[in-house]
Structures are given as structure tokens and as C-alpha cells.
Amino acid sequence: MITLGPRVLKTGIAVALALYITKWLGLSPPVFAAIAATFTVQPSIYRSWKQVLEQFQANLLGAIIAVASIYLFGNNPIVIGLVTMIVIVISLKLKMESSISLTVITVLIMMSSQEFEGIITAANKFLIVLVGMGSAFLVNLTVYPPNFNKHFTDKMESSFKTLSLLIRTAISNELTEKTFQKQWRELRKDIAKLEELYKLLDEEREKISKVKSLDVRELVVFKQMLACLHHGMRLLDIVEDHFFQSRPHKMETNEFDGHLEELIHYHEMILLKYSGKIKEFEVEQMVQESGYFLETIMEDRAMGRSERLRLTIIGAAIYDYAFQLDRLHDLIDQYQKRKI
Image (cartoon, rainbow, N blue to C red):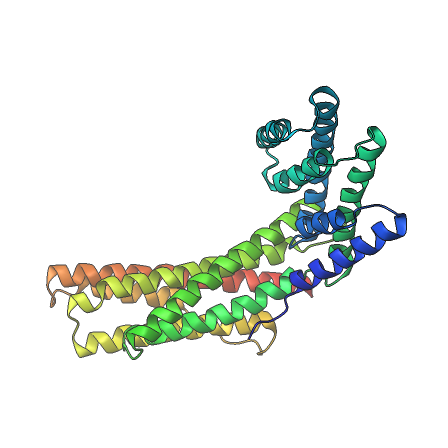
């Protein structure tokens, strides 16, 4: 089922608003404002503001070049093509790649007009584009303003559920290959989305913190949450590459399976504590236990050297994952105490 996302909805509202404003102002043709609005809607307030500034500068430059070219060389197809190339090159040099499409459209709007009457015509068409950009920014600011904190925590919860399923069945090998690969792909996609959400949050913190207050300590917690997911994925990769190739005995299989179960349970409890869904829980000494577990593997001379090396690699990844979880627990503990 296709869902109507906030950005899709905001794009439609911005287009409608741009069309109404241009008609109310008597600007023609209004469709150019709708095009400009479509290009300006962005996933965050900061990016929307940045896009407006960049597009204003790039479009102003494009309009000046277009008007000058018409006065000097006319507006035949060859001139329009050359001017388009020049505008693209200048935009790339000024590192305004995101504004190229709308700038080229502005140039084409001005130069393809059959009734060019000088500066007044150019100003009219440039104003139409500005109305479209302004409409998009206004809509982005007021309609469903993005709540990246909630988006991040929701996506983190769903990502962890997938990670939990994969880690809990990594040793027992209960999932079919098709199901495992499907869940693995979903986890990678979810983590990529989480990284993008964190990047947006970090941009908001850095660029508009004076306008919109953001808790930097919470961002530190989010960053460590991401790190824990990455280390969990790395652990899965290592188990996949080394565990079954080491030809483990049933006792070793049960030990590794039990330790992974403890780790993912610890991860789950930490996230539940952050979301306020559970009371304070007794902190497990997972780092210490994981260290003992790794030492036991390294000192076990009953198995062959190759098998011991493979299991040691897994043991080191388990210790690393436990260390990151412990750090996440400490950060959440500090964050919640300061918040109170």
C-alpha cells in the first residue's frame, strides 16, 4: 500500500499556494511558480532555507546572463543552448549543483519568450520563480514541520527489532536463507535512513540552533545508538564468515548462542530505558563477562589453531559490541539524570 508522506503532501500544498499567489498578483504564467515550488521543498527547515538562498543567488545570476544575452545576441536556439551551458558551468564552479535545474528553467523561461520587452519582462518572470520558492519555504516551515527526533527513535526501534531477530538466530541458524537475506537487506536500508536522519539533526543543531533549540546531549546518545547498530551488524558479518567454518561442537554452539542472547537482551533493555518504558534495571557486567569469554576462547587448547583463531575473531567482536553497549548505557544514564 502506497502511503502519502509529509514531503509529498507539502509539495502539493506548495504548488497550490504558489499558483494562487501568482494569480492573485496577476503574474503570468503561474505554472513557472509551481515548478519552482516543486524544486524547493526539502526534508528539513535548514535545507529548505539553504535551498532558497542558493536558488535565489543562482537564479538571479541566470536571469542577468539571460537578459544580457538577449540584448546582445538575441534568443535564437543556438544562443539559448550556449547560455544554458554557461549557466551550468558557473553553477558548478560556485558549488550550487542543487540549484542548477531551477536556474536552467529560469533561463529557458526568459529566453524562450516571444514577447520579451526588456527588464520589466525579466523582472516579472523572476518574481514568478521567487513566489514559487517562497511558497515552498513557507509550507515547509508551517505544515508538518519535521520532527527528526521522533523519526530517529521510531526508525531505531524498528531497526533494533530486525537486528535482534538476526542475532538471536545467527548461531541456531533457524531462519531460512531467503528470510535471512530479506531481513539483512532491510536492516541495511534502515541504518542508511538512520544515518541520513542523524545528519539532518546535526545540520539543524549546527545551523539553526539559535532559532530552534536542540539538545546536543541527545544527539550524542543518538550517535552512540547508531554505533551500536553498526557493531551489531559487524558481529553478524563475522559470525557468518567464521562460526560455522570453525566446525564448533554442540557445547561451543550453546555457549556462543547464550552469550549473543545476553548481549541482545542487554541492548533491548538499554533502549527501553531510554524510551522510559521500563523501570531502572540492574546493570549487567557484560563487558567483563565478554572479556572472560574471549580469554576462555583464546586459552582453549582443545581445539585446533585455525578453529580457535576463527572463534577468537568472533569473541573479539562480541567484546567490542558489549563495550559499545556499555558506553551507550552510560550516556543514556547521564543524559536522563541531567534532563531531570
